[in-house]
Length: 137
Image (cartoon, rainbow, N blue to C red; front, side):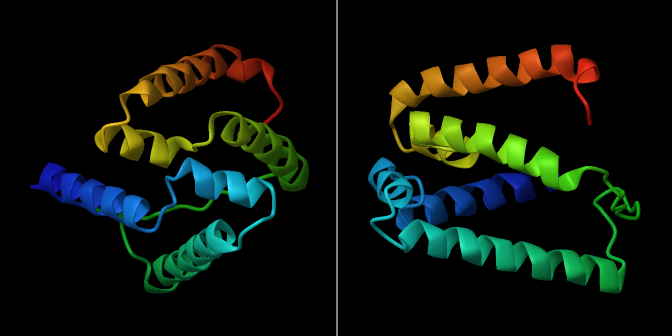
């Protein structure tokens, strides 16, 4: 039953990404050239939704699917790590015109050339796993 739930959430996510044009390379291009507010509005809405969702989880002590309490660990050096990580993420996003969520949405919508980007992202994740213990966290 849980797999069906995640499958349906994924379908809904894909539909929302396509209908809102958040997976559109042209919208991403406009965003990086500061020609349109469209993507900034979507990203801002996602941030607000995430903040509210996290506060609801903290206030009502909502548990995960395995009935475990959700922990929020403290992190050191957050500013530096977010600037560096965000810059790398943004460069990749600008280079390929898609971030991880829309890559799979585009593949599901029939844009099969995006498989090259998906394979590259998986390879990059694998390489990060190999050097993760050598990086400051």
